[in-house]
Image 1 (tube, rainbow, N blue to C red):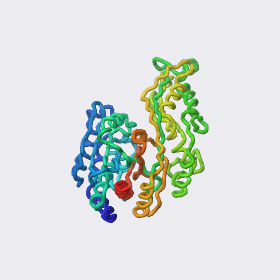
Image 2: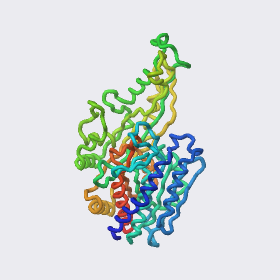
Image 3: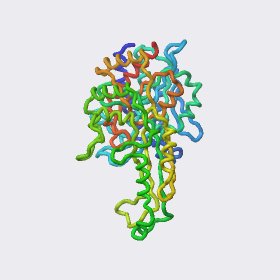
Image 4: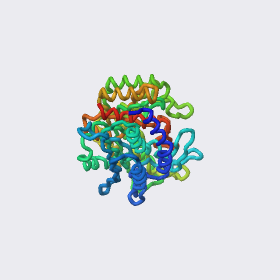
Length: 472
């Protein structure tokens, strides 16, 4: 394979083909189903799938089958099946994954920017879904095309783009069952929904935290009461909620108190965390824009990295039952609702954690208040298998030739349920979880942006890995 041609092909595709189409994709408000109850009627997810389908169909991929797959009452997926360059006994299927659904727009975008407004500025493509992770389908397809253009070989490749990842991939197990025979024996999984701590090297995600989330409502009254009359007699729903939260988390330290939500940190992952910090010192500490004199919970960067990848944590991500301060009267409110999101160590049992959390929230409730649980979700994390020699060699080579810096690993604090599903289904597969996201790419928040050159380099790296997979 002519490596110069690979690089040239990728660059040309990004400049002439991908950036214009990806910009059009950003303009589609394809909210994930959890954030758009009427997604089927609104048609934005279908529009995003159709947009990518048209673009991929126009690519130079002989024999490729591009198909929209839809199961009843489930959001669609786009499946691209590209036959191996050489017939005969294969090396298994390379499954390349991405998603087309998006997080909500969220207010507070900088002047001149907006969630559905693509803006290319100083090598950054701004807009919702640019980095997380609308570019993935383009990059995966371009990598396959580049291998072919350079005279290289690749095994059978299947690009799978789902539309529910930001909702926890609830429909994916059904699709994997439906497509099991068609996918065949997957021996390599490439996921482009991740990234790393800088834009100078290839980053490999070696673990993903699991997730348990639940919306908790504490009810004490059928209707609100004057706080001067009821206060001190009727228990405050907020105070009861505080007491329940204290069962989950130490308010002074942030430590999660539910033992089922903890797991031992493997020695190799602790060592990798130290190597990651040494490769990009200061990155973790400076990744978050703390306000004024606010200090982080931890002071050591390696501990910070392990805290975001191998230790459980609680975030309160939503609330209901509170009027805006300007509208607040002297009322003892009838209920308090909080949405709780707990990230779990990669090897912890999400269902066991959910059962423990449910017991904590519903047993011996102060004052016998009514507790309602809704929007319940549990997803296991993932810990990568050891790298095969052929893949380690390929990573070393591409790091030297494309990035000029050694590759490094990172444990990701977020969750990609798809990885756990595939690891269980294909236990002998190798996993390359990577991408163009950086710690400052603003995924899920205002001013999301894609580092275009890093995305080009990642695309080139995927091409090299596919070629190595074909001759392993």
